[in-house]
Length: 152
Picture 1 (cartoon, rainbow, N blue to C red):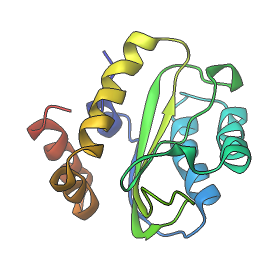
Picture 2 (cartoon, rainbow, N blue to C red):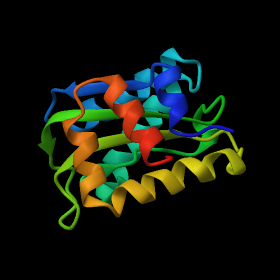
Picture 3 (cartoon, rainbow, N blue to C red):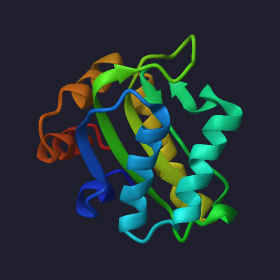
Picture 4 (tube, helix red, strand yellow):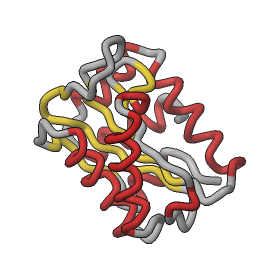
């Protein structure tokens, strides 16, 4: 079963990303998926295009963006990457900006694999203290400990 623990094992986490451009942030998260053979380059481009066309719908909870697109755009399998941002960034969502956690989601149609990932992200989105722990994490080991402690 795929869950957030796989992010660390698969090297899908990047901490303290320094960018103020939402499209560049999405590209960085997408490239982590690309490097791990989870998506094709066209999927990364489609996530950026979706943000350009549809805007801040990807800001799903306070401080959390979840870029994604249809699996038909080049998802090879289900996976998720995580970026923490060195400085919060506005994605254009008046209720949930600024963003400092970005989960890039890929789903190649295995909805049963996607569900635990989405449940974990919802849990993070509804818990201010948990979001803050992710925000201040200084290492991938710290992220792994948070994931294990909260059974994400």
